[in-house]
Length: 282
Image 1 (cartoon, helix red, strand yellow):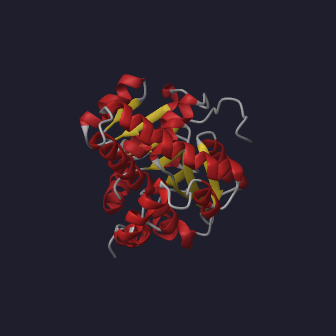
Image 2: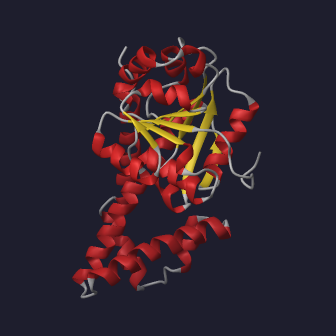
């Protein structure tokens, strides 16, 4: 199986239908791996389910129905309620129909061992842990994964197929999941803040808001592509636009006074630390 595979035949379930579930599913649909008719979603919130129902997915408030119908089930609820969500699943699922399923956890701070323990009553359950981010929606996602003890080679290839069509997807040790989650999962919010600040600066200089935001976003996009496509060190790329006594070095001086680099590093530390606090409480 590869990213060039034909349409996937499995039924896909989402326990939790929020933003990350939407990003994953819409990425697959946009790349024609699946259609919404193959999707089953459960949520306690009817307003969340309305979106999925409008797209043509099967919706329910009962987690066990998703486990019964879907072959691949994404666990996409808030980390602190995963035990409750699975307990509800166990109350309502049909054991012979829910057996031998692949569960993909996208929960921050929740280990493979914890998920496997919670699912031990689901016969033959296999688990993969994935940390994706919302730019999957536009085909520029950044995801990492690690397999549970019972995951098969087919499961691993399936996860790679799902996430590689919408960006980059790499295998990492589970010990790095929270760190990557801080960088790639929380990172987009930090970049949105930077884009917003650049746009505000442009408005202050007299540029209309719409134009300023477009230029700020395109500048970030262009700089990112320079890093990815040239493979050159960021310091070298920075030097190429930093002339002696010029405008850029004057701006960089202000950023250094504001501790931009140190602040971003502290933000990643804080996000990674918080991820470790979000898992199920013992």
